[in-house]
Length: 639
Ligand code: MSP
Image (cartoon, rainbow, N blue to C red; front, side, top):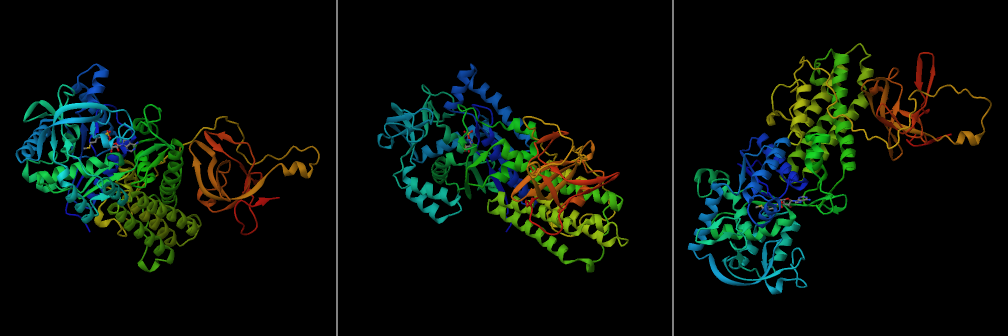
């Protein structure tokens, strides 16, 4: 069911340092969800921003020899530039140093004080500087901070406290009654576990003598507001709380607060009790995602393994980066980032499956149909394979829709890419290159049109994740509207018959990883041996020959004789370069069983790695591939 409105937020990011992959991830995730909802016609509001007060920022400023405000002003641009580069479509960007926010924090504090929800008391306890939090003696673990395990400082001072403890029972009941409030379920259990211990009141002030960079308490000029009390309020100050009643009722409560798992307590204990005390309804869902690890390790500055999103975008482009992050992380769990995994996924899902399909469809339409969408013919021509193809596409539409509501975007994307693979298989099965030789053009037209329409739907489904590339795909398919039309998403016949298209360059050019040592090898078929004398079986057995099935075949730009192939040899997938482009069309090769010299030294030919050599027989102008007589599993040994 479509919601009546969709308000989504990201955490607001500290401006003590430049953005990293964790920040980029949450913001991309929010953007993808916002874009899906907008496409469905749901009024959407997407808020992100920066958390500019507190010790972390004050410390970073001191280290840089600038004021905290300068520190914030310099760093905020780095976030804003990154969001622009990443095609983030937030509706608003809030900075906690803005007047519109400060006013709301102060009004809320005053209101809580006036109603006895905040009181002043002498505090005698332990303080963790990096966590900016107070702990009771009983909370400490081996005398250290229970959160970060670093030493704590003894502190005795007067402070202001929010009566959080009185809401403990109410909160436990609320969480139990509203299973959607904390997601995924195991995070709800984590919070309920935390709430099994007695909840303390929350210290919401810091004396200026210790920390001056914050929002001044409206009722005591010697104090500033605790950074979390300040920061959490952004979710309501950003949509008009206490300033624009109409705007506030339009958007609040938020549909989703997206957060990382490390800030669960602040969002599922502090925030709901603060809202309860303010008489404001709670957000519908706080969704905590896992962490991006660098390989198997935590990313940290000291380990020097933090992934910089700007580097990845510069190297591989924005959309592949967005795609990888969304496809690779199962929401809730940690995920591992490595450049190798990125390249593998890019080459397989985007270059081989999606990009290749677009090139095939355009290429054959240009070659066989004069470069315009052909008429698929009457309904009566719809065969079993077309029906199956179309039901796979409908299935992908439903999966993608469900994956948005269930926050399982990675599985939605998996279904769409599986659908793309089925279109490639459909083409292999129907062999338009063979149909093109028949005088009756209708079967050819129907196959090409069906493949193009199916590809169009997959492109529309991927649009919120890869807006730029999928706009290019729509253009390549001859569509003129700027954005997918949800009403016609899975309708048949959206591509207009007769609309002209033309071939475009590769949508996702393959990422070629240069082999450490390039060994040059001729890509031609084996030359006739200038054999002197006979060889023994031992000589022959040095050559390992194996059968392989061709999965991918494409031209190598700028090399008229060469094709790049991907073959399956048993479980193993290999890339080969073969000098057969003058004798075979790439489409003809898909699905063929060929014979490969499996123990050739790898070579880099025209920048593409080749791991083996195809066997072919040639005489004069003619060349034919060596294949086996009948069905045989790939990877079989030839001897
Ligand atoms: N300012 C607070 C949030 C206040 S919200 C009212 C804050 N800022 S932060 O910049 O330190 O972190 C922002 C988000 O980045 C958090 O959700 C955190 O979980 C996330 N990440 C930090 N490192 C991360 C990874 N390596 N992987 C994924 N997300 C991670 O906390």
